[in-house]
Image (cartoon, rainbow, N blue to C red; front, side):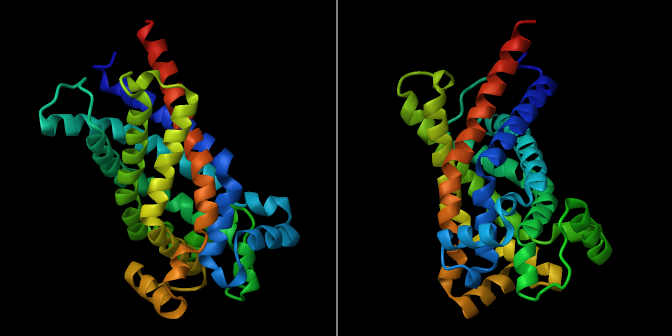
Length: 301
């Protein structure tokens, strides 16, 4: 079965979708808080202030704005990511001259994940743009940057198409790539290093749920610590392009540094790190267990 690439790709894609779903359901409120603080740092004094104001102004549902596109984004991203991850692992084996079933080192797995993330970014960028805009619609109206908000996924999609055409969904693509490619090197590298630590002399496949969740959480924290300023710039570009043409990555980055200082690039880091551990722990737990279950089912036939 392992020699059949089509079945292997389908399993990786399905397991990635399961992981993406678990990630969103675990961490959505913190993701909303992160995007709000990244895009409008002057409105909030910190994490608690953002949570309190959001609850008072919009209610509990305000934390779940953008959940539908977030689910679509994460399911699409992780399906493509883990499917391409499997392909990239085979490419790395070929490049270094290993057998198809040989185990890769942690560094080689990190490189595979980094390359795979470039493909995932192409499906992630449009859905994440819709998610970020829904999450910050209230702040865009409060700041006077837009006069009329959009409260549904369809209304945001329609406004993007009417204003910028289909390519409008790719505002912030260069920033997304700059975040994903190095970020997922640290993501998969941190995850595999942590699994190696817990496994000791055992095979990694025999790890229980707690080590898997801790390893996933560690990988998520490594990702965000490495590329958080890039994600902040991406959020600004995707949200503020609602009110007019936005400068590219370097222009937006320089503008934030000049007007707000370097700490503005880390606005929202606290909820991101709080979210990273449980959300990515749930992602890898769902991915590994669903993948293992499907592999066993196929092996039985």
